[in-house]
Image (cartoon, rainbow, N blue to C red; front, side):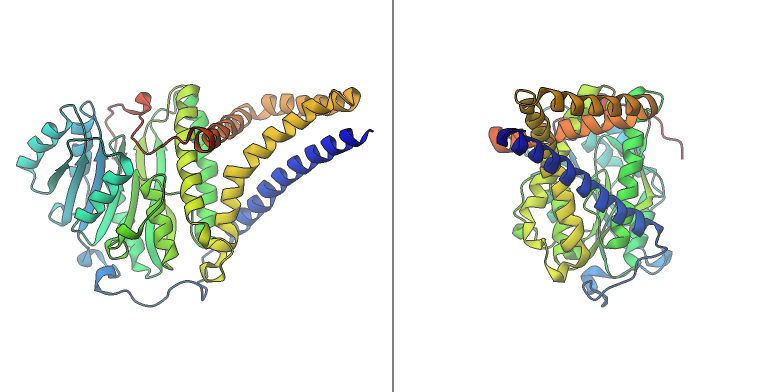
Length: 406
């Protein structure tokens, strides 16, 4: 081979090897921690009791006050059912504050106000200009009066016991924030089945990360944080969505952020591949931005396995691996001009592997390509377009009304 061919082929091998190694090593760690029976506290995490602002929850008679913060923008078609869903919670209504932070230009705020007349636990914080998701969530957190602040979204529905299950995690004084599990309502659709497979993998990862230390993946549809830990949100200077930023903000203070599969919320996945790519692009871009803004936590001993393993590996998988896969494909295409037989052989091996994968694991293969393509698109929008992904850019097929069985 010529010197150029050697460089191209070596670069191709490096890109693929690095990508496979990242997934393989991290996957092995997640598998190991999922098989461990329980989390063992380490010296890098707080174990002392909280102040009065972050009291531990000991039993059902000691339930804290809870504020549910819901950013809304033009949700008139589903907001009534969303409110009814909150009111059907088995958490005592006298201890609930349901706070809608609205910047709509439709009838959403009027509908909320009608409900607030009959239900004193419902409150509206209204803005006459477009705020975006993060400013709305932060404004709601600042206005919230509860000891525990629960994040929720207009497009999802909480299980009746979701708030109780969120709150009970705060019996552990190490825990500062909790997130929950998606239950999809459109499993009868092809995209719903594919998304459900993705969520099973994500839940497995989040469970392993939570046992290792803390997870990175906040689901703003059902999550909770101790109010006492976010009194200084003015210090939070992170691009991307505020829910994940708040979770990392809490971890930066030395408190764990965990996934609890008993906390269930219901939602619809996008019904089309285009919708799924749009949703994954927005979420991927926000996650990359947030993790990068907390890069000061990388490889810092005081943040334990979260700083040394979880955060760096997730950033590598989100920001580096998709780009390396693209560069590997480009280098292999370029190699065809210098060593066509070698390039053709490699392409054949890749093609046969994909064919076998599509036959045996079609949904997983398609899900992987959709995910990596979404991340590439997200990286392009961050680096070259400088696009903000903070506005509530809806995937309309996720906004549907449905009665949830208790």
